[in-house]
Amino acid sequence: MSEKPARSFDHVDTWVFDLDNTLYSHHLNLWQQVDDRIRSYVSEYLKVSKEEAFRVQKDYYKRYGTTMRGLMTEHGMEADDYLAYVHLIDHSPLKPNPELGAAIEKLPGRKLILTNGTRAHADAITKKLDIHTHFEDVFDIVAADLEPKPAKQTYDKFLKLHGVEPKSAAMFEDLARNLTVPHELGMVTTLVVPDGTREVLRQDWEMEGRGEPYVDHVTDDLTGFLVALR
Figure 1: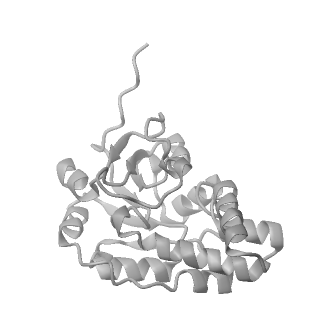
Figure 2: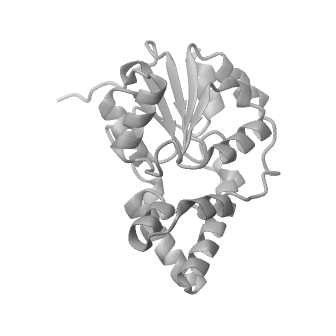
């Protein structure tokens, strides 16, 4: 029995992008700053050592989609202070990326961001990359009622709010598990992986899934991939 061919982009009129480690290179390790601040927050909030905070952080991230959702579920944490604290990072490693901006601009149709981060975090990053003008809107964790990807209801809320027909949309993500629901809904899915020559700070499970049937395409060069689509 032959494998089904990967879905093409010929019919796509809505382009949906994750934010962190998707619209900027993994090797910048910008997310590591957020990761470190999450660990500090967990340590202080639960009054545990940094070592125990690391264990809890990664356990909740894997089981709940975000550490925040785990803290809310397991400990009744309020999200506002957490979100403000963990996204207070130095964005200076980011530089304008005119090539990526041009590639996004030339895609036919709408462009949206769907992130488990905050709108403020997305705005800061896209402005530093100088690509913010190419996106119609940002659907963030607050718009998702604090329910992160890969929860199906998060994608359903996004699609309904923005009037997106999934069968004519494409999704770009750096975590394969976050492409499961989009693929089931009919979206063309692309997994953005680290440049093979770069060292990145990721857990093993975060790097899995590139060979799964819900991943239509894989690239370690988002800009080049988008240019080639034209």
